[in-house]
Length: 240
Image (tube, rainbow, N blue to C red; front, side):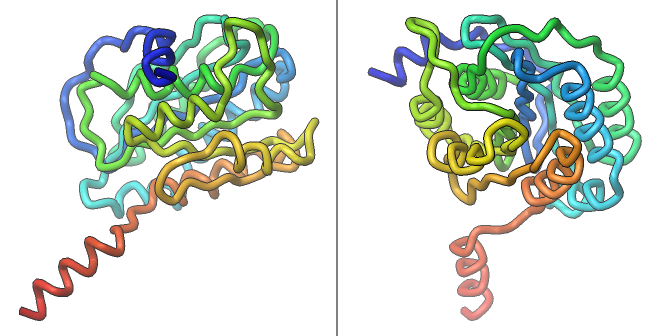
């Protein structure tokens, strides 16, 4: 029943992209709530853009079986506010990554408003993966933010329910907790937000440390790691 309710609350899926197989469908879900001022928002955006220009990140993309990923950025704030996202981009090399970074940096920021709606941000991110014309070997949401869910009656979706919704759709949720205002936020993300095989949380001590944390996080998310069962199957087939 919970999943049915969450599905009803979720926004409509975006228009289809050209169908293509990718190693990873990645949603970077960025906190734009009232607790994030313009300078802090700019540090998040520049951190993401810089990471996609980094040779190590580009190397991780190229090392995948298909050598390409699909990425978008979703912006979330207070639960009842509309969510926004960029069009999906295929990243298959430095030119694609640079174009994505430049586009992200060129976008104006909507006015920061209200509380922190992690739950609805996660649900929105799951929904924009559906019917997007992409077929990723893995689907991952990378949630970054500086606060805990702000409860609003009738509007909020607890992160614990949102991650159940993600898990039901086979989507992994990872977290990047910015500890500027809440030194225990990493634990909250670990206990209430992340879900899925290999899900993890990293912490940035401040917004100034966001870029380095995002760089490490992207490499870990993008790097292709075959499952143990898959490797065992291959080894058994070779031994026959």
